[in-house]
Image (tube, rainbow, N blue to C red; front, side, top):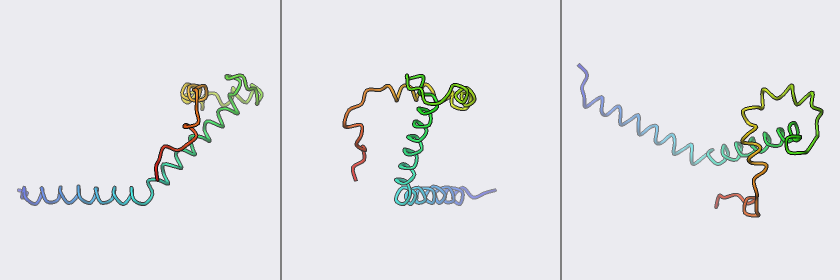
Length: 99
């Protein structure tokens, strides 16, 4: 039989190790990962604008290339259209983080 006290101690040690690891992650690279994700999203929006700008009335690429890329971009179209047509003000240009 396994000792319940030993099992409880191991469980607490694992939780503590996970907590310390998450704390170090937050203290070291969390902000960098967040900024990289924002930049990736902006580049995806720009790519979709260039390729599918005709959905908003901005014809840039010929329709042949648009149709070839459509299956890969289809899951992102609705969110992209909503974000591109959303009304913005000056506060949207500022980052919401206070450092």
